[in-house]
Length: 347
Image (cartoon, rainbow, N blue to C red; front, top):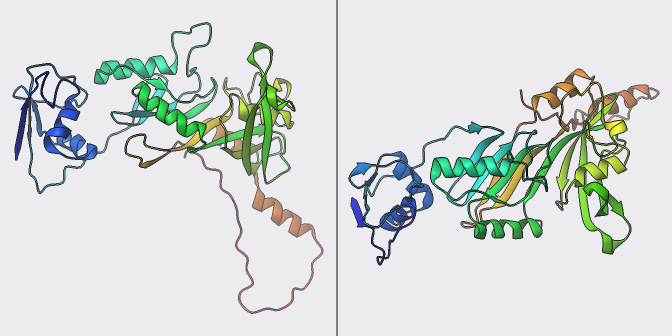
């Protein structure tokens, strides 16, 4: 089947991105449209065209040739690594990236030129002729992991509403200083902003923003505890403040309880904090998207080399220290399955 359109300013398919023109011509889903580009079905002014982000001009001729009974699935795409970030997923509306720890997400009042938002915007303008990226949420400098950016302001507003309503799933993995006594728990406080933009908990509800952080202990060593952290709210510095105020700052944190957080066993100029999971509803299709990022190798290495002591190992040690008693006989094997929580890291 062949579909063709000549771009006219008064036509129903006017100037715009070529992939949207193809979608209107073929009446197919966005996924199939991507597949049409991948399988050499799209022509611009008589020549094969592969870039779905090309902006059309008045007078351009778009031709789509495809078989109606065939399924044109997008071809798998390798993750593309750029300076300071790796593209995990992208479409015409959103782009999900894995941020390197050394970058600011956005400039501060000092107007730093080399930030994550500037580099992603540069990538979009260079690779896809787009306007750039729009901020939805942030990660601190020194923190690595997953972030979603919007491709226009309307999409950014839709995603920001999801975050304001606490709909996205955001999970972090952290190494905190000391032996955290709880297996799981929750921090709940109102965060206020002090001098030099430092955050702190306050009892004055009017002066702060509600911040809720849930955590679960994964592993312990003699000096550190690795934890899985789930955010209900997404306040600035929330994880760092809550653990520091509990006496267990994030390892490597130069701002919150640095006298405890800085350790010779952690020589890297970053925090031991990584955004491992991000899930949200696509702002257009409403499909639930979920992404995972491997824990940085330096975090995995520290836990493995520092003499890890998992929760299950400690239970076994406690049991071994108890006086031996003869258990009552019962049917079945009598075995109980352990609940060891493995350290989830990159191999």
